Length: 326
Ligand code: SF4
Ligand code: MG
Image (cartoon, rainbow, N blue to C red):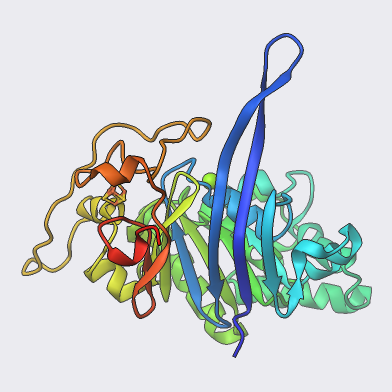
């Protein structure tokens, strides 16, 4: 069967302007030619440091940002070719959950009004049905109908994220793009919100893209995980192979920083040096070559191909024959 979402050759270049007249001086290649798919009912984790392009990717999938190039196909429909009004309709099926629910909830609106809004926008149900749905979804996310008249500031961070999740669910979407949904929460609350998201996925047959900045958070919720570095997809695999047998030196380094729960399991430590280079002036060849402990001559000269090295396990690194230029 066809995947629910297919992303092909997606790019986002932002112009960089400067000087007195705001002339275009160059461009930031925030996302540079990434491809992946997401099957119905699964969770794809997307991980990377800040500035790697993961949020930009999430926003392009909903066309909150228009791609510079590339194709996004969702549920058989090519989103990248839809008009603005057609895209507004398609957004009923794709919703986002944001990192900071406080910033994304209007402080002057009651929870009822906030949850009602997507129903109004998409013209779903009559006023009575809308109200019933608001109460129903408050319960579904572990709050209750007496919370409906309250305002965002009267809730804790974890409760606010439950409200953000409820709002995303109001239109019965198929796909939820969650951009660091638990990063701003205390660790104990993180687990509760992740469990809630997993229960909702099972009960409502949801598909998730779960964006995070560390590999620890996405491990238990993801079926597959993609690792991004400076606008590129460095590696993508099913969760078990990625964590047990990471192929890309960058993934290996990220995992060296995650505590290993099994003391019998020894992972060779890969330490990366230096900071992430500027995406306005990314390194030639493999963008990771300035920090990679395994760098070879070819690495600064040729861009490694993103290729499937083992079944379901793709990587972009010259250490693997399949990724060498052909
Ligand atoms: Fe390191 Fe070269 Fe692989 Fe890039 S292509 S990750 S520099 S070994
Ligand atoms: Mg971000």
